[in-house]
Amino acid sequence: MSTVTLGRKVPAFSLPATGGQTLGLKDYTGKNLVIYFYPRDSTPGCTTEGQEFRDLHAQFTALDTVILGVSRDSLKSHDNFKAKQGFPFELLSDADETLCRLFDVIREKNMYGKKVMGIERSTFLIDGKGVLRAEWRKVKAAGHAAEVLAAVTNL
Image (cartoon, rainbow, N blue to C red; front, side, top):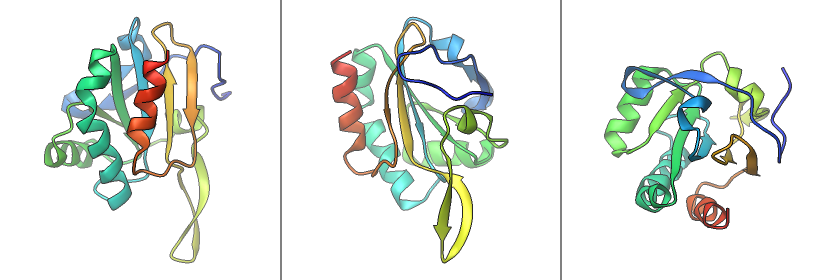
């Protein structure tokens, strides 16, 4: 499977999501879509990033933009994380890394001195026609959601 490319249509995908749903690209035709990949539920950076997207959610919605968070965590973990943080958007479970590999976000990381494969915090902006318009890789959580909102405003 190839990976996504700026300026090109994103291949169709579908994953299990919070609330017992299955969501995919086709569900958002005609809307902008922000997909943010994060390493793990309920960790400090991932919580900060999710909270910032939560706090700006109304502004994204006003710009006809949907937010989806993605990690390899289970749906049970996602449902708990979403409820605890009051996220108004859905979280997708990519346990087999299908979407992570499509967006090329799996990287070797150092975890307490051990090399492990994990998600590199990354965000992608897809327009209503399914075309990848912007990408952010190696994201720092704090302040990132505002940067994405600025890009959506300029679409």
